[in-house]
Length: 332
Image (spheres, helix red, strand yellow):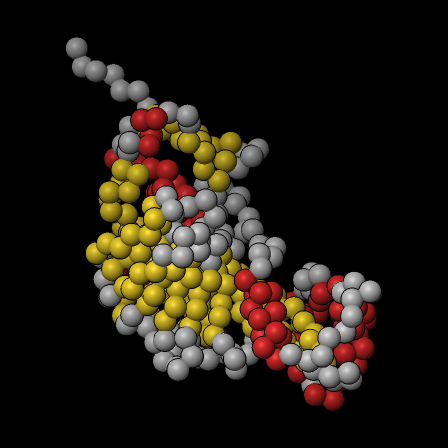
């Protein structure tokens, strides 16, 4: 079990090993053994010369939240892309769950164990699951959500990527923390997009949410059918078709006058492929409108090609699709 716990701490367990460790953790009779197994890792994380402080519940909760918000590497399992003729189902449900145990000393002898879980959806896949309070989460391709296994003191989740939330009504605020801003709700449904290097957006379908920009602290409240988006350092609100920004959870990609660079980023995550655009400004001026649902990636490429002056080439060695602007011959 000692070897399994080493792999558990480093998040490298295979599914069978993870099941064994999970069963061991779930058995209350093993609490003493669990403490003895994990204590060396806890002690190593702390500096040996740190003084042990008196228990402070408020500080403990703040530390729990800080750990949750802190950016941590998450394992991503890439799906193999062996050929262009790859057909994807409307929704491929795949979730990678990683759990990490943290110790906090409540007294001189008794430890408090809090488990942080991270659910990840690899590129080319999507998943959905329930949080400890019964709220539902749909996780888009290339995204991850982290949360403390118990919502006793607060309902706080950390998001990287894109997710749709159906929040169960509760007196405690439900907070989604991202790199660019936080979204607070009590009972509502909304979509949050927060991919690194891309536009931060929150789109509300039902209820009421408050969005706070992290860099400026600016706060806005959204009504159903509204979207808060980051424009530079400013957070702006606009009326939108909310379905367009949440349809991905139902297996649909909707594009409305969306430029080619944005389209290719979404296709990369959706089909687990690598797409490169040539350094031609005219490609950024191309926009697309349409709905993708059951199309294979090869069919999507053909659709892009017949609706705009582009061409594409596939490099089997790097498994990369390169898109270039296609010169058209003017009739004489």
